Image 1 (spheres, rainbow, N blue to C red):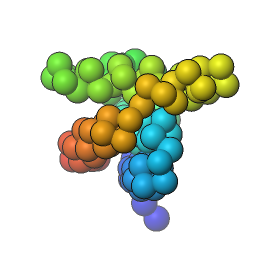
Image 2: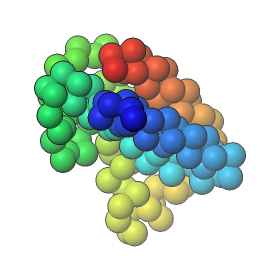
Image 3: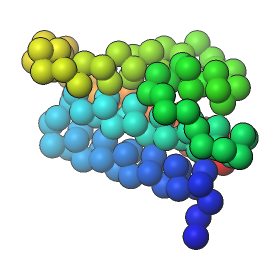
Length: 126
């Protein structure tokens, strides 16, 4: 059976696959949501590995980065902040409608590519 950190990483991969499916189906806002989930789960896997305990029940990526004790580059921080913003927007109906027009296929593809690279980097720590 996979270790707890490996289980988090497996769930992150599932979320990445779902992000790809959302891109292909034209549900671009949910690409952001699934990308946020993938990174959140990778961070929780790293925290679980490093602390040998359950990660905190947080969703704020930058707070999780702090718990994981990671140093990020400026572009990585920008990705985390953007994903966190859209994560909140997908949770409230009034913000979903307004956000749908903000997200294009090109933007969603770029975010997915950046997330894939981030997940690959994070997985090297598990």
